[in-house]
Image 1 (cartoon, rainbow, N blue to C red):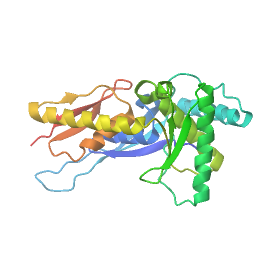
Image 2: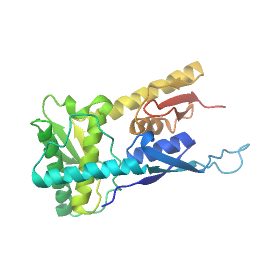
Image 3: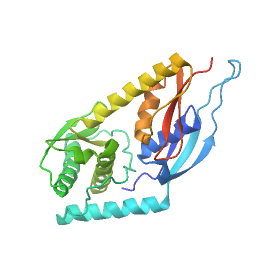
Image 4: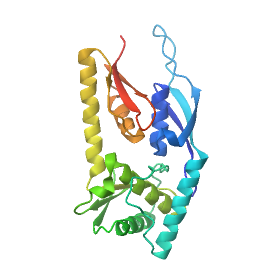
Length: 260
């Protein structure tokens, strides 16, 4: 199963459209190139249709080669039982965005969970960590594997970067072993859910501040996935609008009052 190499993103601004595509690919902006397909169009005097910005974003060839090399090494490690190739470092986030949940039989779902679980266990061994992997189904049909135990911070890393790396290896190997994609989310002690809630709270506070003081509020630099959470949380807020500014790793969301 080939990795997803490009994505079409849409959003109220070009920056948000790029963030949407980056979030789908699961990478930072320095790993891609992009072109603007359509500029956003606003209503004039209440007439006409509002049109979202559309961009095409694709992985750089050198980045693809790095990921394919990592996937091959990890696949061989699973076959040979060699777990030494997983390093204790923050690696590149997941470039593979699983497609929407397909209608699978219980047997097929079990095969997805087993393949992903095998990969996670190999990674845990490489870290010298003993932990349990709990399996359950998410709200949208995705399979969630939550690693639970003690002293697991090393699996998360700074701002979840190491966890993103575990996600890329697990997704890539699982997809290749099975020959099809089904969403699999790797979590550690419920970190992802807690992180999402915290990011939404940060967004809501920034929106309240921007509305109160009548000026833009710039948040700290975030990954594409984190920025996407902020954009989605504030998308329907009638008082503010969001945009992303800067280049990775310093790209950040700016929350501004809507012009009346």
